[in-house]
Image (tube, rainbow, N blue to C red):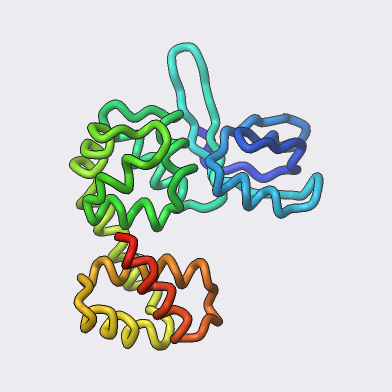
Length: 199
């Protein structure tokens, strides 16, 4: 079972990377977030990818991930009835890992259904089978990463304006990622209000 590969990046497309590991070329299927990270690297860069080895009767396929978090989520998705590697990769390509975890934990079937290849029934099955585990992973992340200074005040302000805390946390998390760590508090509040207005 291959769990990690380190080698020279020989070729890269949105679907696949080929790594030269001591003279052997390994083809790895990629979700889009991993492709975007690899795209930032210079040609022939040395890279290390987390790997899921998928074994079938007629084939052995490798899936590469930039982060261990992505690989864990991919493997969680595979435990859901009716979700194979191709659909799991499509889901991870349509949603960033933390966004996917929040959607699962919140039971956000509508958000999951907007992912290409995921219909309402599949989204409902994803929520049913992964909601509790996703909530645990979200809580673990929140405990490990304290919110940036000012975020608690922003959340309180949004809640005082009548928004549900869960919605406010998701909106603030989204705009924090989009605007960057150095964004001013008034800008974050304005962007979060815009996002919440569209819910």
